[in-house]
Amino acid sequence: MSSHHKSSPRVSLFCAAALKPALESLGLESLSTEIGATVDIVYASTNVLVQRIDAGALPDVMIGMSASLQALAASGVLAAGTIVPLAKSGIGIAACPGRKQPDISTVRTLAGTLTAAGSVAYSRNSPSGLYFQTLITKLGIADEVNSRATLIDHGPTAAAVIDGRADLAVQQISELLHVPGARVIGPLPDSVQHYTNFAIASTAPAARKPAAKALTRFLLTGPQAKTAYADSGLEVS
Image 1 (cartoon, helix red, strand yellow):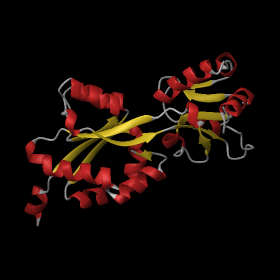
Image 2 (cartoon, rainbow, N blue to C red; image 1 turned 90 degrees about the vertical axis):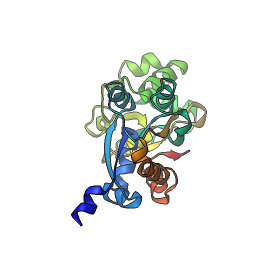
Image 3 (tube, one colour; image 1 turned 180 degrees about the horizontal axis):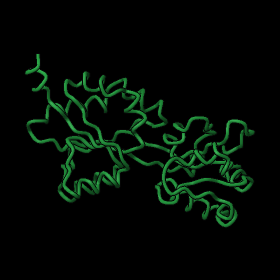
Image 4 (cartoon, helix red, strand yellow; image 1 turned 30 degrees about the vertical axis):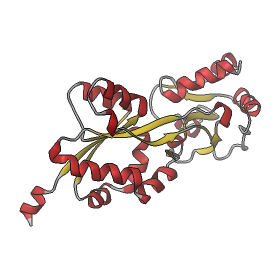
């Protein structure tokens, strides 16, 4: 028995933090059982994972922002042919559970809701925060919103609506959904929505290719995986 256990293959996965709730809900043990190999997962932002790869760490499988994976392919770190779209995450707005439901169904009502809020929390440097800055500038409300904004350096912006620092929080829906007590009031209207696309790619050497392929296939097509993505606010590509 023990010798069989020692020969059980291991496969390493670097995974963008936005997909952490989905993968955690699947459970590491069931994931390992499903593919017949032990899965070692590292969660971090795509930028941090790329930095680790630049420093010499190379996972067997990686889930990250599509543009970053394409850049890794361009530099020869992984084969472009192994990159497959996985899921996308839109931007939404969360509020305190007790607040009256604000209207963000149209661009006009969204602008009105943002300017009426005592404070809007958004991330200073994340893709969602950078896009939000562009959006409020385009809507002509940047000065008004930013004069009372709560800027978050890292972590979930919805924490600010729970502790009272802000009335509204802007971030990827997949991140807003996982702050206990926060109420996601909806996505941005379609005409101003901005998606972050995530893809999966394999870089496994020959010895671990079968396990890496099994993991990739499960994460792309497994019914449990697709349900987990949807439940965590991601849209399957």
